[in-house]
Figure 1: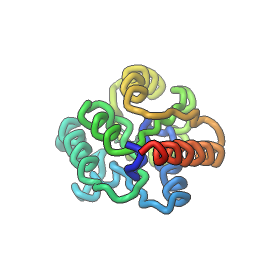
Figure 2: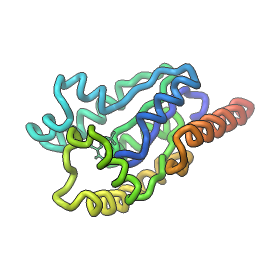
Figure 3: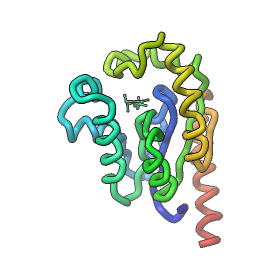
Figure 4: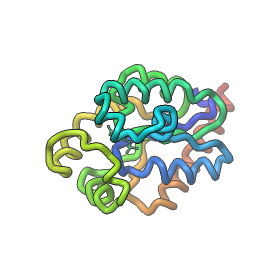
Length: 181
Ligand code: S3P
């Protein structure tokens, strides 16, 4: 597991996967990949319009395919918040590399997401109020996030601190894993 150079970041919308992923990729001198971007590039349209035209199942299928087509070159992969909804994706990520869960409580996710101008491009996931939607979905997805991840980090701290901690932790684990390999 740890001899493979792929680091997956999982967690809810707004937990910092993209920002932290780019920071870690830079430190490790690895590529940065975002499954949402892969899906949008392949489809030639935004996720919002994809979901509007073809529905969520269609998007989930495209997301799974994007994940499986990333390849094996060293990369930090920011995943979509719902990537863990398919068990096969969870198994694949655990097997291919090291999976990090970025933990942020619902109220903070809500504040971050609604301060983010990109929010308009994110399709609503349910008919509930934004905070209720986040609370319910986070509760529902938490078991999958936790059982898929090899490690979790409190991602409410300042972004540089989180990136430092993740980097140090990953480098330390790798060092031990290489000795055992
Ligand atoms: C989703 C999160 C989004 C995107 C899609 C569905 C989800 O990704 O994949 O809109 O189900 O939580 P981000 O977590 O990168 O916003």
